[in-house]
Length: 376
Ligand SMILES: [Zn+2]
Image (cartoon, rainbow, N blue to C red):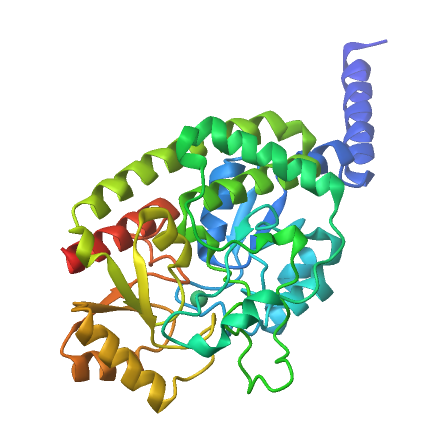
């Protein structure tokens, strides 16, 4: 065979090889190496999921920064995104009131409720609706307990105790139980509820304001990602352990900030119920709330408003903490009437990038510092 002929043959072989490669569909092995795509319902959950995922999954938030998770209505484009995601993460406990049924429809088995192992507290009955205290007895019927889930939650609690030590212990106060053993109802108002999706005694879904609950979220996200992408399970586990250590540091920092408030001034009034878990963990009293129920969708009565003004003046409470994700118009009127300050907190959303609360850790530091500054 001449040299020239050999080269031609070589080119022909190469051309056939290239043609064969081009004709083949995408290789499954390569497709599997694509990191899974995760959608979290809102920005705080998306940040925590991103810490667990590292570079072994991509995480985006369905709701944009500043959206109100209680009333967010998904667009047709959102539904398409939910359908395409490998995993969808939601808080549950009826937090995402209008989104949850859509997630159930669009993502089905690919949706994971991250709060399942979290011990849920009732919406405080406190100043808003004291006559409704008996409602705590019926947070709907408990679904059948899932023993596999119960043992997984026990494992998560042990992991949390290993990270937090004695501080993993939950402070006093009422606990309804872990979310997996509770039904927190849905956005449909119960008969006679006058449109209030959450009554006093219903589940309070704002669990992440206690860093140990953010730790339980991280462990649940770790398990969901590992089931989806077992090859990266060790990465997810290591990222979760590192994040738990950061949560322990955060917890210490918040405790130091709250310690600067004289004990007799550790009472807070908020625009809507957001800080039940924070208050229990750091020894603050929830003196009152502007918007009754656990959501942002109702209005206080004139009687509620007068009672709250009286509470603020009698207890010498210096400020009302408002939301970045809900209207504070009524709170501003009450503050002006009672002669106290308005202090905005980040509640149902992180801040825009670079604005000081663009990760969960910074969001918590920002709010704790604002609370300590206002009450000192
Ligand atoms: Zn809220």
